[in-house]
Amino acid sequence: MGLKFDYKHGQTPLDEEEKEGLKIKSITTQGELDEFEQLNIEKAVEWTIRANLKLEKILTEKFIKDLHKKLYGDVWKWAGEFRKTDKNIGISWKQIGIEVKNLLDDTKFWIENKTFQPEEIAIRFKHRIVSIHCFPNGNGRHSRMMADIIMESIFGKEIFSWQQSNMVKANETRKEYIKALRKADNGNVAPLIKFAKN
Image (spheres, rainbow, N blue to C red):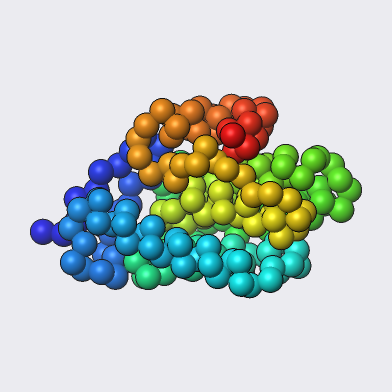
């Protein structure tokens, strides 16, 4: 029978081939999937703490992929690989590599030239990478973690609280997050920064 997915507002459905990438065949509910992913994510968080990360390592395509693999590799075969299909959101999959390179170059420029405050650089990065939508799934969590790594490892600042939420449940917090993302789509990152800090 397989797993029945329960997509929340703003989540990207997986195509059939991507669903086949589920490593743990005993998972049959969205709740079980969320639990396995959460355990995987906790291991990834521990890895980032131990990894002693520097700017040169963080702002690379390799690190972006490695972090996704650390977050979801126990659960999904395609973890850490850029998607190879188009989705209802994000850019054409053929453009991912180019757009990631542009984002990394822009971010390095912002840091070197102090174009924005640290939290704005981290949030602009987070917003752009989630808009690119590099992976079949897990882009929101991945982008928030990238923002936290940029804050902590590049700027030596406190990580964001993200409303103390993992944003998996379809509640008011998730709605507010999606609303802040939409405003950032239109060039206003202030609500997303505010959301991340509260």
